[in-house]
Each structure stands twice: as structure tokens, then as C-alpha cells.
Image (tube, rainbow, N blue to C red; front, side, top):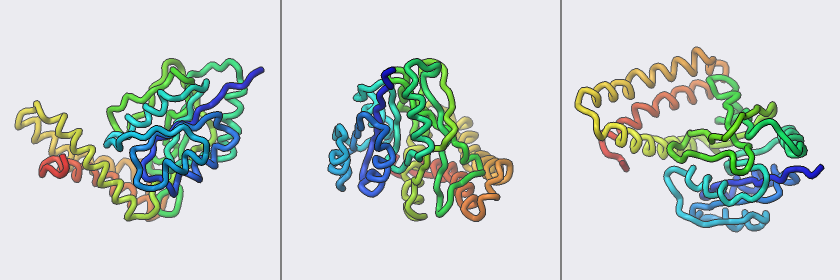
Length: 261
């Protein structure tokens, strides 16, 4: 029985530190590697080519899911595994994916996988941060990104199953790196707010602003830190819940004062 082939696809921008570890984690798993790079200013594209990847250079877009979809569209293998450069496939997860590929016929069009998120020295296991299911593995032609939001999930045509082993995610080198990404996302969300409010009247805008300045951040913090027990992740859990909640008023203030919007 011939095993199914696998394309590992990524969109990158200035990922020379993360990319080698990511690509090392899929050795023996990927039949092809595709990297769509947003004109990195470091050696990202050069490193990708050393790993035998097919590399496409394009612009670095605010919604990086556009570049991810470009990579998906370039894939030619039976299955697609979409990764970010700051993610790692564990040996246990690699074995599980190989078992799926070895099945000539499968009942699922795609698979959700749990993900562990590393934050300031530990994996966050509470606060709604685990299992943090993400849809990353799907049959070629059956899955795609809608490219509307930076936190959207892929959609698949057909039923999706679930992997048992977790993808490992290392998104921040340190707190300053976290704040840099946090600010970038907030500017993106401010643009979304601008789009949502452009045809609203004054009362609707007032209610919307009240939600973003008071209701949403309060609800988010209480939900993640108390209800979902983020407090069990020690001080890192508090910091994550606090800044996750703070993104709502900060994004709204960015919109209100026109910061990069």
C-alpha cells in the first residue's frame, strides 16, 4: 500500500532563528517543504533553500494568512501540514501523523491538533490556552484559509478528526518580543474596528466603544484567569490573562486616535 505524501507549508518573515528548529522537527515526515517569505531582511529564505524548500518571495502582508494560503496553493502532495516557523512537531506527534499518512483511505478530510503555547518560561496549560485546538493537517484541495482575520482557523470540506499529541508553539523569545507582537496585532484589530464602525451611527459607536473599553476586557480577564483557572499557571498566567484582556481597550484607542489605522 502506497503511503500518502505530505507537503509542509509555511509563511515566514525574519524567522532565521526559528526556522531551522521548525524544519528539523519535520525531517523524515515532509515529502516537500514550501515557504512563502514576505521579503525577509535576514537569512530566512536562504535557510529555507538549504533545507530543500520551494521558496516564493512576496510582500509581507499585515494579514499573514494571505501568504499562508499562497503556500497552501503551491502544495502538490496528498496532504498538507501548515506550520508557523515558531512551532515544532514532537516525535510523538510525528509518529501519529505518519500513521495517518500510511492509511491509503481515511475517513477524515482534516485533523485538529492540540497545541502547547510557551509563554515566559513555561507552557500555559490553563486559562483557555490548552488544548488550543488548531486545524493544520488536511487533504490537499480540502482545506483553506479564509484570509479575513489573523486568528482564524482553516476550513475543510468534510469531517475533521482530532490528533492526540500536541504541536509545540514558541511564539515569544522574551517579554519585549511579546509586547512587540502584541502591539502589531492591536494595530491590525484597530483596522478591523474602523471597518466595522464606518457605517454605524453615534449611539452604535458609543455602545461599541463601551464594550471594548469596559465589558470585553473585564469579561475576558475573569473568564481566562478565574473560570478557566489561568491562576494555576502562576504569575505567567496572570500576565497572559491581563494583556490578553488589555488588547480590547488598546485596539479601540488605536482606532479612536488613528494610530497606524
